Image (tube, rainbow, N blue to C red; front, side, top):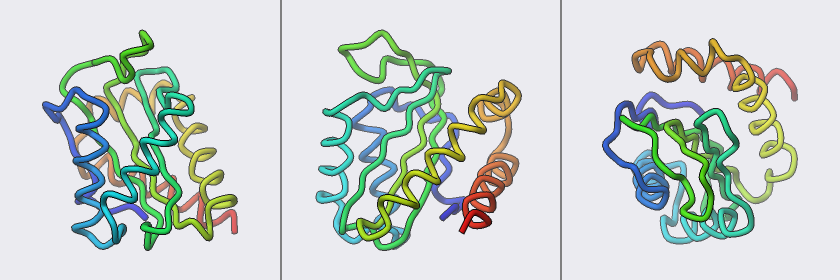
Length: 152
């Protein structure tokens, strides 16, 4: 679920669609997603229903799709804050892109969102996401994965 190659730090990207596309392409390259366009369409459909910017400078775009082979969590830290959705004032610097196979969407999707949301309530955790290196962030995300897997 967590792969170091799905962690992007200090990106120059400051546009929601570019970030979703960039992380989605990585998920295809690593075999998590079989159909890039189908997956991106699912994520954009979800965004159109309600923005995934959740506060604290964080957004959690996600899509449930048959194109997702294996569940994954991708993470991107932008160099600077930017508006996630032009229709809102919410500014984001941290984005988690989630992918969940459609047949596991209800339970796994909710477990992943719950674990990430729980961690993001911790100001120290958010601060580390803004400042730590890839290895440290990988360990932090690995802890989230371990919590999800231990819930089964």
